[in-house]
Image 1 (cartoon, rainbow, N blue to C red):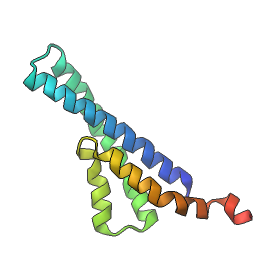
Image 2 (image 1 turned 60 degrees about the horizontal axis):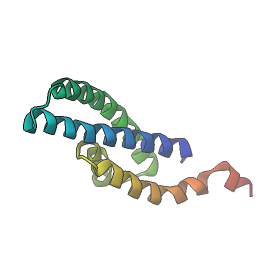
Image 3 (image 1 turned 120 degrees about the vertical axis):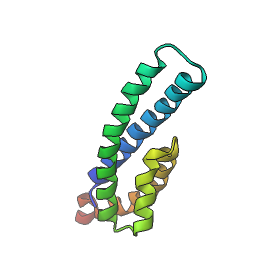
Length: 112
């Protein structure tokens, strides 16, 4: 597996996680605190999160298929982008798990 597959998953996990946390704060501001501008903020962040979550799904599915994960694990990783802060924890666990495999498959290791 190429390092780029893991890297693009990691980037999208962080982007999705940050946007979801911002969306959560926006919803609290809109519905609980009744802040001015929270509705517009929530609308913009929700649209961005929605589109970028689709990209996250594509990259996470690509990573899972190349890592040959079972279906349950694949679904767990795909759903991590829908639970605030879960993407950060899942990304960390997956990265630690796959970094050794990426290092094994890298061309620099193969030449040595």
